[in-house]
Every structure is written in C-alpha cells, then in structure tokens.
Image (cartoon, rainbow, N blue to C red; front, side, top):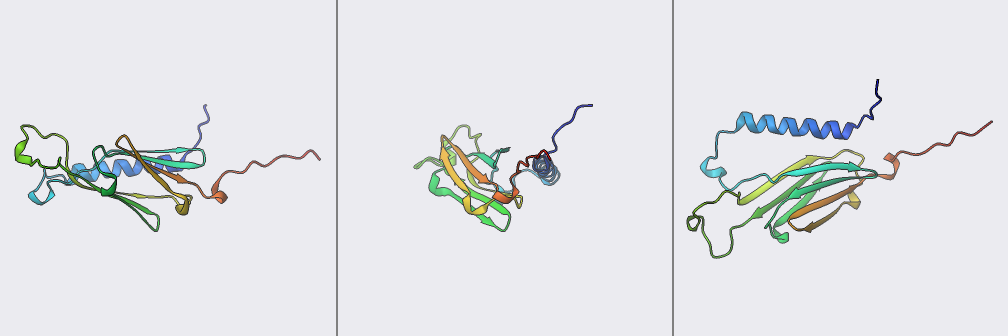
Length: 146
C-alpha cells in the first residue's frame, strides 16, 4: 500500500472548482442581454513550499483595469478587457474571444499572510504570490539521543 501525502488545500481547491462548474452548468441559460460582456478568465492555483500561487490568464487587459481586493479571507479579482480603441462589435466578422468585465473570487485558507501578498502582470498572466504565515509552516524537530 502506497503512502500518499494529504494536501487539504489542494483537495479544497479541487472541490471548489467542481462546485463552480456544477453551478455554471446548472444555472447557465445562455447569455442574456444584460449578461453579454461578462466572462471568467481561467485560473491555476498551486501550492509550492511556503506559498500559494495563483495565475490568471488576462491577455490584452490593461493593468490599470485590474482590481484586486482582500476582505477577510476572500480574494476578489475584477477587471475588464476592452475592444481595441476605435472599433465596435459591429466591425468584426467573427468575435470569439470574450470582452467586457470579469470578476473571480476565491476563499483563502487562514494560513495565508495577507499582508505579504504580491501581484505581478507579465505577458497577459496575472500572478499572485500568497505567502504562508510563519506559524503555519512546518517545523523540523530534531530527536536527541538520551
């Protein structure tokens, strides 16, 4: 029998993604007039050592159009991808990529040190580094010979 490491954050994130898909599939009725222009950029969340890393694909979104807020343990990222200046939807023969406003929210574990979160934006990828608090990091305990 193989021993595997239990990663509760990874299991929680997978459960949240499944629940999000379930709600999206259950309640999707096709775009209503007031919903056109709302989209949801894809996100990867991984845990590496002493930090949680969130990567969101937001190509052609101007950095000034991205708003990141943390309230309690909820991280919310909002923004907007706009059509090129001087163009209208009617000017396009085909428009498959979504434009308009987006908003994504994530529940963060209590282990994240919210005061040290850093965000960078490069090549259309928004990257948030969420360091863990010192007291939640694993500590090595040495065994003394006695």
